[in-house]
Image (tube, rainbow, N blue to C red):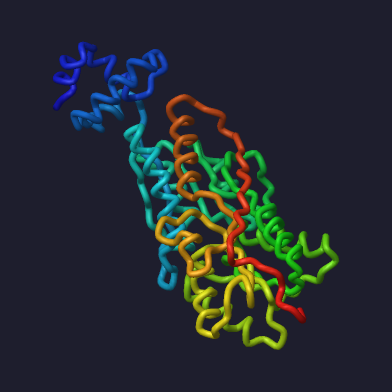
Length: 343
């Protein structure tokens, strides 16, 4: 189906249909909804080149993805992209994902912004003092940040983040209330802002309750099953193992639980465990052999919200500096119990 046929079918001018598809504000919400419904039902696809000439927009969201030997693929990022895609498809937006060597990431961001191939950029996996944020401020393109830097000179940037400090403060406090005094942490890479804040939340709860923070019980690394297993084995082999563990992901928890199972230790009795649940569809905490207590926030929902905000900024010039901080839920299941006697 072409634009002329769609126009005849709907009884609308080709100009009105084009304006509806391109987000012009003078088209009523009812007309836009009617046009989008017909587009979905007929499979009509507008001519991208003509659309770009008419609107000055590319209809694309951009991402620079660092790629290097030894950098593992990440199921968390895939779930985030799924949410981003769900929202983008509603508005007929595309992705442009540019791979980059880690040392050339800033240069690739500049080139992608200047290419005209994207209308907005977003960045994820924010670092402690992330140089990409002040860089994006100098570029003439809308952008969004998934996360927040920790020590950053620039503060007025648009972001969506979860309250990582609050999540792990609440999780640690629950373990303390259950009588645990030695609590370990299997965390993400130490330079990522989310990992810094999760450790901060744990430390805050310990200090509030007059308990020491033992750095030997805290380990940072890739968010993989194998790293969770490796760290759990190391902690169990230590001279004074913890009685409870915090994991920054259910993926890490999968490896940690495997190490416990190999030694005949039971979750909730011999060792308590709380994991952060990003709502990964293939790794539901309630489906573990002992259902996991979790802090929960959907990565897919975060991806959808970030896409929604970027597209709104492109189409309607939405608030460029809006900042959102989502609270997490603490969901208690069977993997947490009283500290074993004698500890």
